[in-house]
Structures are given as structure tokens and as C-alpha cells.
Length: 214
Image 1: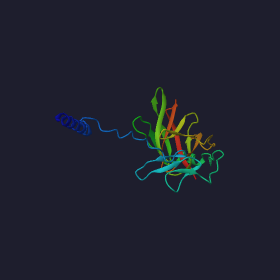
Image 2 (image 1 turned 90 degrees about the vertical axis):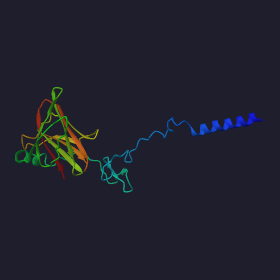
Image 3 (image 1 turned 45 degrees about the vertical axis):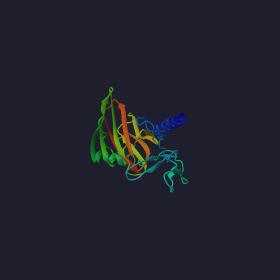
Image 4 (image 1 turned 60 degrees about the vertical axis):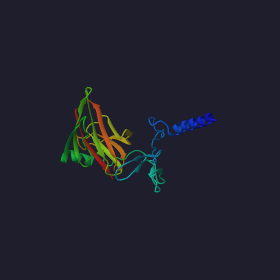
């Protein structure tokens, strides 16, 4: 009569140990964290900033009133080309009259080139036998911007993070001065941090004026 009792007691002990588990066993899998989706996609992308998140919407879209999303802009009219305004006459005024600033490219830091109405002498750095340089530019308005360059044969790349911002138009400047020869037009957005990269080019430096067109 004792065997059934002992067997029952042993079974209870095994069940208790199984329920408690091994103290050295790994914790249960909480699941793989899910990658955050962009609520502004596919018509834009989100900017997460200390002041609050906001949607940077693509051309033809606007931020919705309901929250963080981009919706079609009912008033958008596709543009035909880019209006360069006075073709560089005002920018050439700054070539002669300033204000003037010199910035030097560095692999360790990105100098700023976001002062309007300023003629920059941009000194590039050597890399693999050619001159290159990347600089910070923050758009303090939304709309059309023009990069006026002293030469047309230097490659220019504007980026927002890793996304390349394609130029809307390019054109030679008018015959107002010898210091600026080429214009590149962009649509940029207020509060957005961009980078402007030049080169590779054989030229060690170039002249630059950046203006926001009203």
C-alpha cells in the first residue's frame, strides 16, 4: 500500500520542479522588436526633432491636418522648368561688394555655407588626386534656392541625410560678372539640414553664392 503513495509523492515533486523551472534558464523570448515604420511615407518622410516630429512631404504633397502623414496637395500644379529670376545679377553684386567669407573643406567637420547674400570662397581638400569638399547648409525658408558657382565644370550634390536632392534646373548666369558662371536651382524646405558637396574637380577652390528666390 506504500508504493502508490511514494509514487504519487515523487510525481508531485517532479511537477513542482518543472513548474518552477531552472533558475539558470534564459528568460522567455519577448519577441523581436519591430522596426518603426515612417508614418509620412510614401509621400514623404519623418523628421524626429526635440521640438517635435514633423513630416517633410514630397513635391505635390502636404502634411495632413489630422496628424503625421502626407496627403496629395489639391492646389499643386506641376512646374515647367525653373525660373532663375535675374539670372545672377544680384548674386554678382555680392562678388564685388560682399560680404565675403572663406570656408575650407575638412574630413573632420562640415563648415557652414548658409549665409544668404554672401560670397564664399570655397577651398576644397585633396582626396585621391582630386579636390572635394562637403559643407552644411540649412534652409531657413521653403521655396526655390539657387547655387551660383564660379565655374560650370564642378559636380554639385545636395543631400538631405542620405537622400540626394535632384536639381530642378541648371543654366549659365547672365554676363554680369566674371566671378559667377553657372546656376543650379533646387526646391528646398525650411528647417531642413542639407549638405552640399563639390567635386571631384581639378580646381582647388571655387566661388559660391546661395540665394533664396522670393
